Image (cartoon, rainbow, N blue to C red; front, side, top):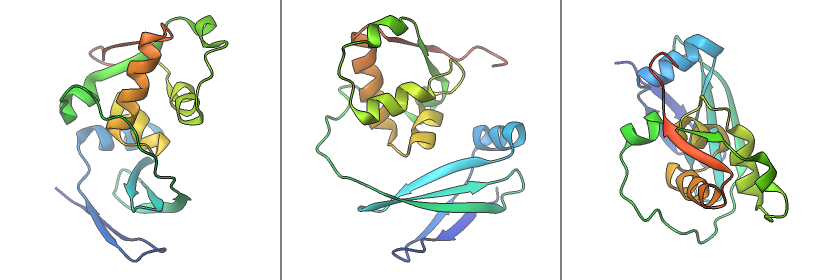
Length: 150
């Protein structure tokens, strides 16, 4: 399969990424697929089209915080088929959500998988999973399986 090769404009690190079927499906559906690479103090986000042509790159400042690790071991396949949905929007009031939790919540549409939310937010799969577990405990979201054809 073809690969994307990109050099970070900020630090010079070269990244090579091999898009999977989900990446290609998304590029076909919406025109572009983003992928993020964490480089310590910054994140390189690369947007590519269905022909694997890089259409745009953006660098965002990254703030490293000590974050809890997921208490479960998960695989990439799990993260690609699990789709969160908002089940109780009124439970959001007064919860004092952090900015990253609000960002994840804003990306939940009932169709995006955990991996897709992570990619769009610039957070790691594990960080998004931790946030979703907290939101699920608060009764705000439910994480279900992707429906066939969704």
